[in-house]
Image 1: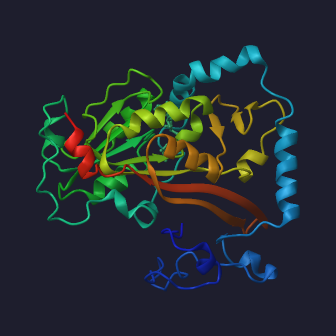
Image 2: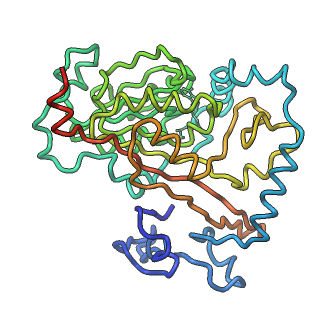
Amino acid sequence: MRPLLGRSLVAVARGTHLGPCRLGHRGRPAAPLGSRILTQPEHVFRHNMWDHVQWSEEEKDAARQKARENSAERVPREEQDKYDRDAHKFWDDFYGMHQNKFFKDRRWLFLEFPELLPPNPDCGAARAGQSGSNESAEAAGSSFRILEVGCGAGNSVFPIITSIRDGRAFLYCCDFSPRAVQLVKEHPDYDPSLCHAFVQDVCEETASFPFPPCSLDVILAVFVLSSIRPERVQSVLHRLAQHLKPGGIFLFRDYGRHDLSQLRFKKGQCLSDNFYARQDGTCVYFFTADEVRRLFTSAGLTELQNLEDRRLQVNRGKKVVMRRVWMQAKFQKPQTTPTDVTHQP
Ligand SMILES: C[S@@+](CC[C@H](N)C(=O)[O-])C[C@H]1O[C@@H](n2cnc3c(N)ncnc32)[C@H](O)[C@@H]1O
């Protein structure tokens, strides 16, 4: 995945080379960051992915029409509740079936989200682990703390662990599927001195986390909030935001409105607008940038980035072109102002 890095989409769309050139896996320079722009339609099968694809008005209309059609017939009301009530069971069965073979490692993590790591090795003076909570002893020694919610089988966890082996950071990760958490703990790279994996449903209002409020530098949610019934997402964000330090950052990547996977749903799988149940019982919502902004700012966070990542994914063998839409956002908890400090008890 080529990083977006909050650069101007206009600049990127013009093919401006704004980032350092990377070497491809055979040592050849990779395409300039985010600038693989399809300018000549007849070249579409030359690459597997094209960046920043513009949709014509006809294509937008066709996508809207497809979503209208596949959501015209909904999951019967009497069946709707089970998708929310048993969500953890559906995901647990998913990991029973697929183990850790389904999702790929999120290798793009640090390109898109460099905030995941401490800024530099000298910034560890202020120890956050002195708050006297029930946090783990290992974490108490690390000044930089990350939480991944809905970590699944660890496709972000292990790239992060590999990057924090110097002990500058501590990673918490949770999922409401006990099997997923077990897969993380059984992984050969799992190291309790760097990471604490635990079972937790983030929708639970009484969720108790193994760290105190205002203690996290980063929260990461990758394709997780989309699994949650839309009516619940706001309160989940409120609760999670309370655990960010002032200045802490929430990193979000998820499905965008009218992504190919939304348009592929069949009639009868729609639960509510833009929210669908898959055959295996897991659910997925498709966000817009306005919704993402509203959700995170209502949780008291300030927008740093909020992008729609529109790509053309190409299956060159089958000569098939797929329109993908992903959301990527970064929101920050405001720093406490001097005035606020004065008025704190
Ligand atoms: C699409 S998977 C993504 C997994 C992982 N973040 C990744 O990128 O590979 C969604 C994950 O969110 C978890 N999840 C969904 N709702 C959750 C909730 N309310 N609390 C905790 N985990 C949840 C699921 O169990 C599943 O592992």
